[in-house]
Amino acid sequence: MTKNSGELKILVIEDNPGDFMLIEDYLSEEHHALEIQRAENFKIAKTILQKTSDFDTVLLDLSLPDINNTELLVKDILAFSNGTPVVVLTGYTNKDYGVKTLSWGVSDYLLKDEINASILSKSIHYSMERRKVQHQLYESEEKYRTLFDSSPLPMWVLDRNTLEFLSVNQAAINLYEYTREEFMQMSVRDLWADDQARIEETVEENFHDFFTLKVKHYTKSKNLLYIDVQSNPILFGGREARVTQAHNITEKLKAEEKLRHSQERFKALVQDGSDLISIIDQNFHYAYVSPSVKNILGVDPEKIEGRNVFDFIHREDREKIEGKIQYLGSRKSYQLPSYRYKDGKGEWRWFETIISDLRDDPAVKGLIANSRDITKAKVQEQQLRESLERYDIVAKATSDLITDFDVEKNEFQYSNAIYDIFGYSQEELETSKEWWQDRIHPEDKPRVIEAAKGIYERGQKILGIEYRFKCANGEYKYILDRSYVITDATGKPSRIIGSMQDITERRKYINAIERSNERLREIAWTQSHVVRAPLARIMGLIELLKNQRNNLDNIEEIIDNILNSSEELDKVIRKITIKTEEEF
Image (cartoon, rainbow, N blue to C red; front, side, top):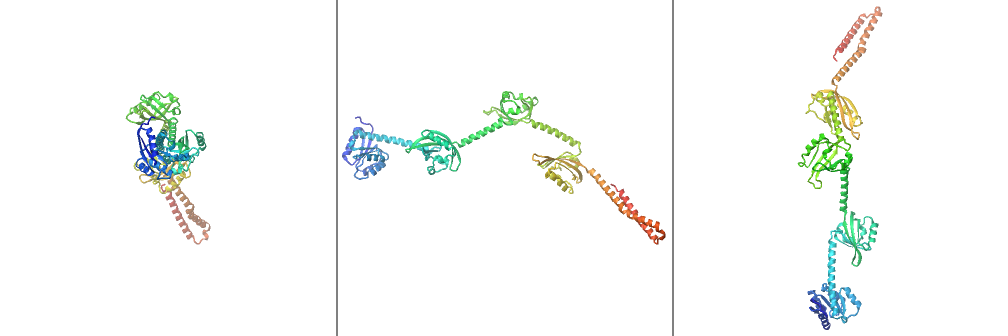
């Protein structure tokens, strides 16, 4: 028989010297290099194994003089041998008992009456190989356990039938906020947010197969997670199970959603926006024109791309644009002066453009032109300029003071007539409403303020009122203020345009007429009342003398009364004459 090479170190725990010698002979037949150590009882075996467990195999006799409990014997020897294979040698023929010892952890069970050199050698070598395989399996399990526990991705093991958690790693605990103990009381169904029927169907259809699935999970605090699941069937502790890797794609989906919104905004700004975005190469040819050109100019981008920019700019405006382009390179961004640009119908539109120099950017390699159609603004500007010119002409042609009050800004603007009418210098002039109100005559101010309430409280559009206004020299002038109210979109006053006419001379003339009329009324009253009394007495006395003069005893007294009444009448007439001669 060919002997096995390699040194074999055996511990034989056997109290019978004859059996030990037989074992030694069997082993010597099969092995060249052999080191056998004997322990006659449990105590010696324990001492030897506590000192060293550097044996390839331990051969254990179950009948030792110092221990009667074979189960305790086997388990203690297994513990002391520290993983060294233990082969039981016994005279017991009870196979059930042999199977029982195998369940305690021994590598093999041999009957002494049935062994020979070959059987013993094979059992030892099978036990040694089994130990190596178990060690490799243990290392493999430890490696995968380490990978499982230390994985940055959440992982768990589920019972394949009930979907209950059998194990979870720390990443899953951190993500879902449950403790390990809480997970062990749960099934994966407790995490599902929706689509339970779809998930159950997928799990059932792939009971024995690998599958991937996108699901929504809730954490313990009810935060919603989007999870990409990869699940594989395994055996775990003898149970049908699934090992699952959960990839949290919540942030990825949020980023994709942001990107989608960004792309939509880009489309709204560049493709559908009101601005024309274009890229111009170093030769001033269009390399790119945004689709918004169709809405702005009524022409397809393809008809512009490749053509020179100056083909579309009005010849009268080209010089000023070329003058600005000379700053290319010295400035990163600048605004071009407004210019005329030809549209798809051959008509001229007014444009304003901001140029950004991105020729050094590999993604652009050109000039970015952001152009806006300002034709309406230009037309309105021209109309406003013409309106202002008409305003200036009217202001110069009239002696009236033209005012423009901005309600929101609380600011007056005046025509130059204010210097001539009221004598204020530019340094003395202020624009606030309060400055204006402070110069209204105190007797007129309450009436003016009350009239102005019609504008702010009752929606009155036109206001005309007379009042006195203080000049720079402290004197007051009479003015006729006629105002028109301009309202905003909500109907509130936004501007009040006024025309203020100096009516001081007219007011003086009217006042003089009023004073003259007053004197005339006084004269008329005097004539009708004061003059009539003495005149009536005189007429009565004369009538009395005329008709009764032969029968009167007091003629002298009557003549005196006539004389007094005549003097009284003379005084009244003189007073009337003086009043009529007073200057108006």
